[in-house]
Image (cartoon, rainbow, N blue to C red; front, side, top):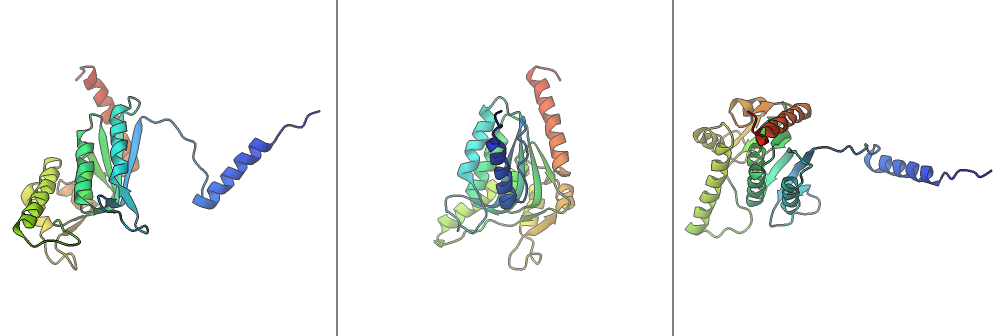
Length: 236
């Protein structure tokens, strides 16, 4: 009588043990989904490479994913989850503009923080959520490193700031005057000007659409996907 081989089972057990050692949990079974999830975490890395100890989201990694979402017929919606301190302004705006330009439904969810350039990314989706405990920091654009003190440099900075403000006000319910006041508030941030707002306040100001979590975001996404299907066949 032949003894059944147990090598595949032993190999699978070894893989599970390795996952437990590395991640503290076994890998969940991969289920096919019509929703693609992109996470914007840590610092948004742009043209300059951040130190290796920094947690970053590289925009050159995000952009191909957004193109794939648009092209893949099996993907019907995009969920963007943010917990970011901000980062490169041009890279963040590029990501926000691409999310806004997608033809498929998009939902964003701010968990932890959606600070600085994370704000336009959060409002770029068709519908935005923020957790009760999450915060968003609104402040003027800063330049780091060597800045040449000539008028052209300051003009460029003003234009970049206007781009950010115009994008945010065009894609949320907050008005420009209110947003500029939040941006230039003094006394709230110890070493800077600006404002920190918590989840409920972000909704009250019209910056974010609704308070909620992952379940709320998924339910809204499914509703937007169904609505998009009806539109595609001409049903209103």
